[in-house]
Amino acid sequence: MGKETFLARQPIVDAEHRLFAYELLFRQSMASVSAQITNQLQAGVEVIGNTLCLGPGWLLHGRLAFINLDEATLMSDFVCLLPPRHVVYEILETVPVTPVLIARIQELRQLGYRFALDDFVCLDEYRPLLPMVDFVKLDVLEQPPEKTVEIIAHIRLNFTGQFIAEKVETREMFDLCRNSGIQYFQGYYFARPENLANKSIQPGQLAVLELMNKVRVCEDLGEIEEPLRRNAALTLRLLRYANSAATGLQQQVHTVRQALTQVGLQTLYRWLALLLI
Image (cartoon, rainbow, N blue to C red; front, side, top):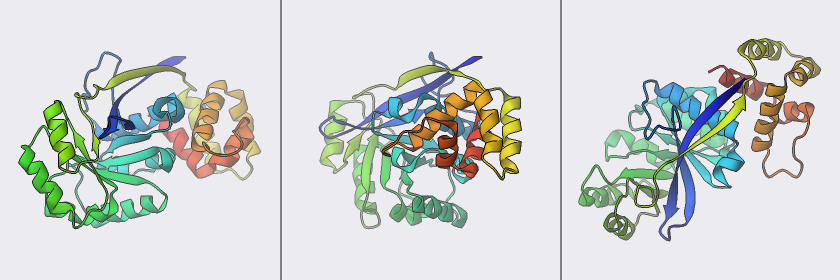
């Protein structure tokens, strides 16, 4: 049975209007012009899952994906499903800065993941995060230009990364941001979010649950390989995922056994759990 998978992507460009990255946004349908989010965890997991379903290669064309994360998603195992080289995780401004959060960011950074602070405002509680993030995003529509300049000057001593201006809607605002030392830009002046959809084959919840139970007690990959082979939907999605995670390797993954070896049992279990959401 087919299911429509939805996402929106909005370009992030450099000072010469060259494409640098995409922000990937949650959407309920092709008709959605904005996200109606009632559960931020579900929205974050949906974006990660739909990115995998659509395929990072097709979706990103070799560029980075910026994805919003709330506290619960950041603490979950789902964040490890996307290969680090493809993604920058945006820490939402609603996420409280705690020792647990700092430890989690440090853990993920050791795995190669990069981070951005979203809608940054100059509050002392965020100062410990500045040395650990690669990007700071500034909402230039919600604050006067002089406030943006003040924030940039204030945090430069603690931050060696790059700035992204969000919600740039006019040429005048673009010029002001560029002259303030901001390196990257996002907003309606460049492009509105583009809604994307794809139909995916659903593997069936019962089949996924049965496979998860096998993975939990697995001692031999053959015990998992055979039921996977019998489920065409799971096989197709696993091969797509394994190849997205293996981008850049000399050899592409073509068989279920290769995919299981490439992904590993722990990541396979996380990936299966994501299919149930």
